[in-house]
Length: 238
Image (cartoon, rainbow, N blue to C red; front, side, top):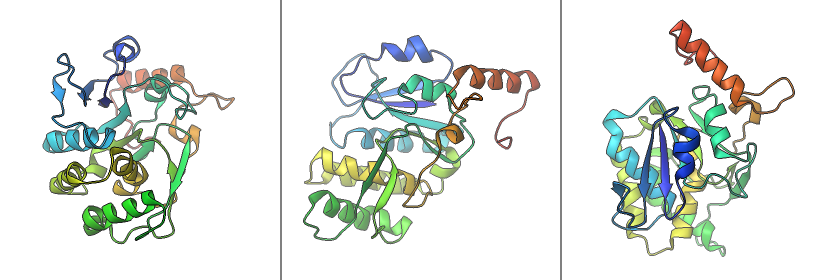
């Protein structure tokens, strides 16, 4: 399943290049009447979309979900530089959490920090994440950026449904801007889903690559065809 966070982006690429290869659902933060899953409040950017989907489908989640923005390309979508290639070449079940870009980011979690983002990171963690995840990463985080990732059902279900709804409600009630609270979640998704604070995976560990190390949708499709013909799943083959 692909979960798309939409505001005002053109979504035609979804049907043209993904189509029925991977089912998808779109949540919009706009007033677009053509999108059935609308959010009543445009706050929290993509974070509230992802949380809303988890809360809505917690008891009926698919085996793996990719959470993405509604744009096909961006300056921070690289290795691969096209989200269509990322989704179609992804080794979907290799890891419980899989970033969809090679771009990296870092941040700090510090109480009363002079940098507002670091202070917001600390407060959000303390108020809604700490009960489940323990103390904040006081030495900071380094991870793949930009809140574009795939995660397994099992990783999501390691936390109760109320955990996700509490994060969403906290963001809605926060006096801080979307940019600040949404970015805190960008810095913490990997830890929410069981990864260490310092986290990086190689491109060809995440995506099918050819002998030259180039990401290959063709190899991914041949692999999917092999699984289909032999009526097996890839959960334990990597």
